[in-house]
Amino acid sequence: MANRTDPRARTVHGTNPQNLVEKILRAKIYQNIYWKEQCFGLTAETLVDKAMDLDHFGGTFGGNRKPTPFMCLILKMLQIQPEKEIVVEFIKNSDYKYVRLLGAFYLRLVGKPMDVYQYLEPLYNDYRKVRRKLDSGSYVLSHVDEFIEELLTLDSSCDIALPRIPRRWTLEAAGQLELRKSGLDYDEMEEEEEEEEEEREPVPDKAEEKERYRDRDGERDRDRDKERDRDKDRDRDLDRDRDRDRDRDRERDRDKDRDYSRDRDRDRDRDRGRDRDRDRDRDRGRDRDRDRDRERDRDTDRDWARDRGRERDRDRDRGRDRSRERDRGKDRERDRDRDRERDRDRDRDGERERDYDGERNRDGDSRKRDRRDEMADENREKKTKKDKKEKAADGTDHEDPEIAEANKLRAKLGLKPLRA
Image (tube, rainbow, N blue to C red; front, side, top):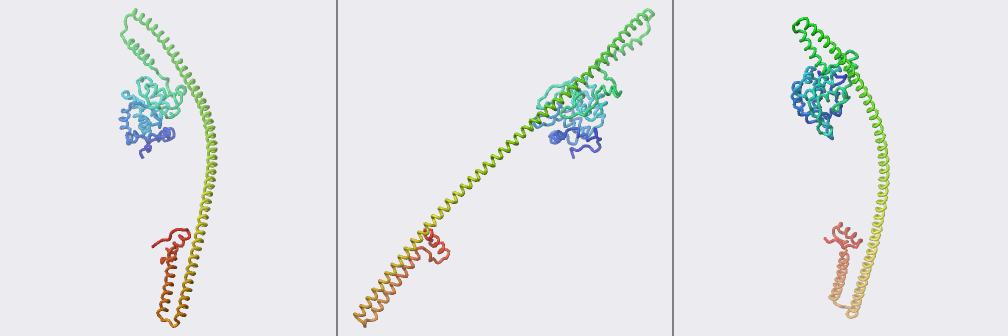
């Protein structure tokens, strides 16, 4: 809302008044601290106080092109569009020179060509010094008449493109504008007033009157010669102005052609550089893809070699486990054969003892028989306990089935059994 043009404002040169300032510069002004803090809610009356506080003028400055307070107030005037009488009072204000520059710049943007020449040309007689802020942020000394000359002759000022206005001699030839009066014309008007006062004096006698008429004729001739010389000087000034304008137009056209050729060469160099950068980026991308493919292949080979080594180690561990299990089975079978042989020997010894006892005492008492039975039972129990101990050594007969299963796997891998 604060950046919108006043709804009651009229269009200027067929567009919104704020559009006279370029969009980029307008956006920078909207983001400026001076615009947000000092220009918010200003009216045509309160804007005068801000204009009186100015101590320099200029467009933008610095690396990020910050706008000056002068440009912020110009955009504010375009936004609120003050009356023409207020702008004329700004221009006629002789106490504050920056207020005068502010009004002159605004009138140059929105005024008609006749008003521009009518109100700005008298400011050629203002030779006061003013401070101008350059693009680098430093200040330079200038004068009011120099800034007025810039507004009337150049196409841009303070980083703003000025609307085109006709040449002065074109308006003079069309009868829309009178000849410009210089400071010398005001001196001539004072001399004529003095002559008129002398003519109003009382008439002396005839001799003095004749002498006065003679002197007056001589003065009239001299005045006529002066007027003729003045007309010649004016014509010479007009011719000089026309020649200067023509030379300036030629120089401007030459500068435009030079700038166009320079811009065209710069664009061509930029296109060549862009093409070189594009080719370089394409080659760099191809090299990067090629390196990435090589690295991927190298990683694949490395992973394949690692997996093959792991598989080989795993096969070696499996073979080692199988050989251990085979050796363990052979030892277990050997122990069983040894136990069977021992039991067979015991049974054979028992039978021998029984035969011996039977031969010795076929009618032996039941105690000896019972004793033999007890010995056989003890031998059986010992065998059973030994088998249980042998089975319990590897932990495969554990009460918990999960621990028993884990002990089987550990026995295959050659590891110690779990104890619980």
